[in-house]
Length: 353
Image (cartoon, rainbow, N blue to C red; front, top):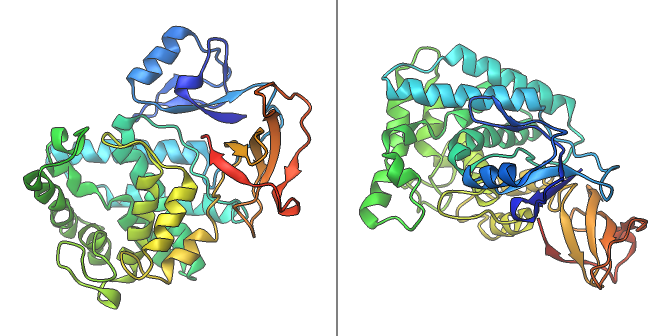
């Protein structure tokens, strides 16, 4: 299996993973052959990439830190919760805890899996899928910090609901494809206080969980919002969610910006240590990030194009790569896998998605 950009999909390509709508229904099932109409519809829905199965990638297995069922259930919960908030209903805190417990169980069962958030989502589903990914990343960070189960659950619920206040911002601003005006940006910034107000009086939601919604845009150097607090004055939960939030945002397709590849996000996190982020948090997250995830297509310094088939945990910038096209662009059906750790003169020059 491998991931390709939807613009590179062809009629007859076989879908390797189910593609879901935000309500959990299947848009396209694994095993379906793509038609021109299917490809066109996926593009209309704002889906930028898909997984396909072909002879070049038949032996490639892509693992995620949480299972498909867990992810879809969590996304569905977030979609339903956002609708409830619009109707002035409360968050089902106990259902949120159950969702977080399921995510924790999957993470603990897959502690050796490098982080590659492999869900396929439309641009319109960004908020729901983003909330789930931020929860996953935050729980992985909390686990590495030695949090016990109850503390992880509290962190996880806060991370899952961190953007709940965006429900109070008009959709045409949240989904605006271009730059926000200064007035629009000031309104968007209020999602932190809106979220805190929604959660602080909600039965079953702790004050610390509500605080995450308020403080996840504070910056370690004091230049964030809404209060401009800094350093250890920002609770550790919010410092964790801040890093997770930005990493997933950079690597996601958003209404106003296409995603960056994971190695770009990694460089950004490193550059902002001590400024935007707690310098203790960034290395903890990077220990688990697959800079070039399994299933990624990369271009090597000798001109060949290859498929990442295994991540080297202790040197994630030098994975194992199976060549699939030579430097002339000819298909290589029998390309021998290269371990870049053992080939110092060969390196990745481009992440092609």
